Image (cartoon, rainbow, N blue to C red; front, side, top):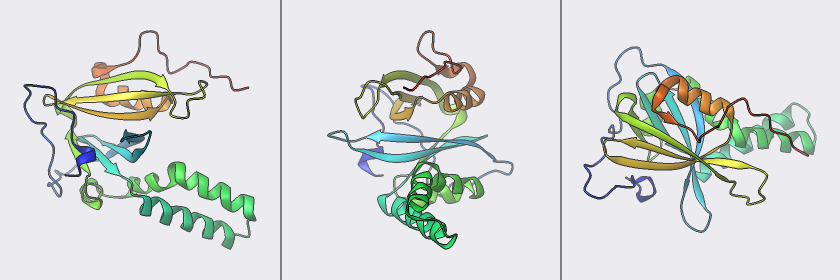
Length: 196
């Protein structure tokens, strides 16, 4: 396992129960949704992940820089072949960077997603005892954007990621994990955000 995906182990705890790469999937496993995640490294750097949520497990799929670069190049070339100018090509590339690559997971088998990149791992939905969401200032540090620090607690281990403060992501987590999702006091997914 890649050291950057090692769980943060509380002292005196049992190791996390991760599903091995290529584990068999029982019939009926369906993808419910996806959430872009970031795992902090050092000096403000991070590894991008996609949390692919199925009706049975949560697959943490790491996006490599090569995957993102290839995806952006494909998007730019496709926009160019459609006759779009420079700005249209850049717009397509940015859209692909933010969500396009991860959307391809919707048509993949969860076992293929799990095996795609070294460092990918999964937690069974029933093994996740709690998801803690804490609001933090964004990584840009400009103070007008927030992000969540997300802690997935499973089998005595804690997996820490960052996630954008988007109501649809919180709603998806609550739909799948119910009362196990802990949001900040007073947080509402219906909060109006004004940008000036």
